[in-house]
Length: 379
Image 1 (cartoon, helix red, strand yellow):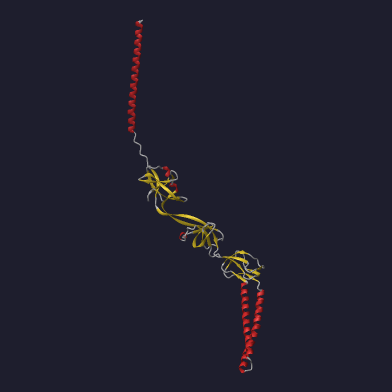
Image 2 (cartoon, rainbow, N blue to C red; image 1 turned 45 degrees about the horizontal axis):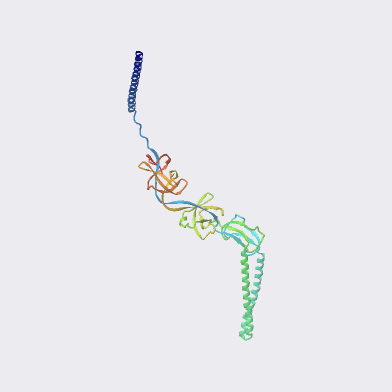
């Protein structure tokens, strides 16, 4: 039994020794493979050329120019008015026999507009002329009597009373002729006032009568509008001065015209709390009165800052804004305060110096601290 167990133990020992030797051999072969692979990879890496460095991102930049002020375009709406608008009427009452104009007609100064019936005035003039002639004849006779009475008085054949009576009659007739002359002058003036004339050149607006009506004194006949010097009435804030309106323009129906400031009215509109400014238009075109007009002015705001494109603005933390500038080819952040914005640009002030290189476009492609290549653009 002891001899049978001994070979079994030896076999187990030999098997274990074989396993150990096999494991050692495998580990050794693996180690040799690793060393050989490392040497191969190292040699291959050494044989591969190094990668070229990354090219700096090109960015479009423009210099920031700090200014002391900026201009804000402002618009105010007003209305076109005629320099003069007159409602024409007769000073006398009477029946209208003729209207010589129609609505929209162009008339010149002194042109006849309408005429009243003057038959009664002509008759009165004829009566007064006849009365004057009769009185003149009496006066001629009275003067003769005075001369005769003076002669007789000098010869002692007439009394002083007779001379005084003839002298009084002569003076009375003289005064009566003066009265008749005054009445004739009145009739002549009334005849002149029976014809309505245009006081200035312009165009006929409202036409209030057709002719044949009997009018009272002062009743409207037509409205005459002066067209040679149109004016624009616009309400402006109280802070505006005459100097701020130099170079102003007024737009009418899409067309702009130079506007000359005339004056401010001395009162304030109680509703809008504005002061009315009057302008004249430098145009030969005849505008439509009552039409809307828009005043364009540039208001100067004193504030240091610089103009930047809207594309250059980036929203910072909170309500702050930032822009990207380039210093020594490196992107930096500059905080800015937005003072005024227009359609394509904004006026800002911030932590940048005059002449700083602003990234005008494409700021979203770079980040602060990045190296970039500058490309100048027109600002």
